[in-house]
Image (cartoon, rainbow, N blue to C red; front, side, top):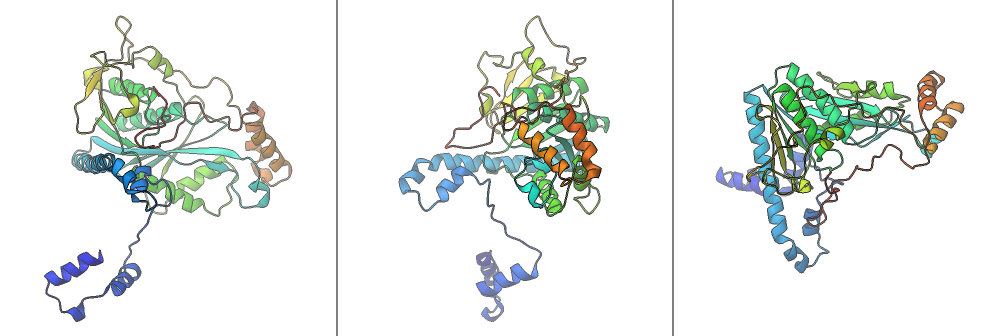
Length: 404
């Protein structure tokens, strides 16, 4: 930026005495403008870090040079596509442009007091959807005694969100997300899109950001929530609801949608009744490589996917011959028919925190009701489903499970 400034000054024929040096430039920009320069400390792209590292040999950089060129090309292409989608949504308000992500898990109760430090606490999950055009944030909130953390929870939240948009006159929805296979990129989410698109006669497109470069507007909501909750005592689930609702000082506030009984539906039976294995040409679908999924309800249940954002789409028809599913009337069943088990350590520690009055007496009814209904298990983390995976890039190899 300083070099650009010097070149600008030269183009304006400013005298040398009127041109700030680099130290002066840095002081003015950093101290007199409302600007900040942030270098991410985590979640950096592994491939970009490898190419940037001074410890790697020229041979290593040469080996991955072409891969990084394609990597950066895809990142820049997707940015242009997203800008184009935003312009379309700004022009036509029947188009909704949204991004979504699951915040890193919160803890309940939350306190800096020493009794809480070594105790297992209740995990709270916040799945957030950001409506880019209207600048609105929607937070679907639940704790591990209500539901797990996987595709059923994400798809149920999105189905509720889509239904709300349709009731407001939305005809097309474009989603952006990262590539987490267990939560965002799997057949269960896509089957929910198919159901919603046909049921409401709308078009749904889901585009996946380039691995390692998945910063989205929705991440700013999570950052604001973490900042607002920093240093605060939060004793139960309702206080987390209030904390998130009030995390944003100006209007409109974030809308918090707490899970209720039977809110979470499962779309696994729908996938089992259909064929999500191959396209219309009989070629097996490589779900891990999918970059975009598009379903237009006016075309029936046809699903169009792309392996490259600027490439041609392949089409699959999930309905099996002779046994089609009527998507207009199909209702997904509840995901859970019994209480969600909590780990024995969590049950023990929450009980001890209540008995020692580290958790205020006024909050005991919440924990007593929760612990009376749960079935303790010896698993370290009872709420982590087997299909939860992390987004990763290992020199072109993702860690998502096959078929998920």
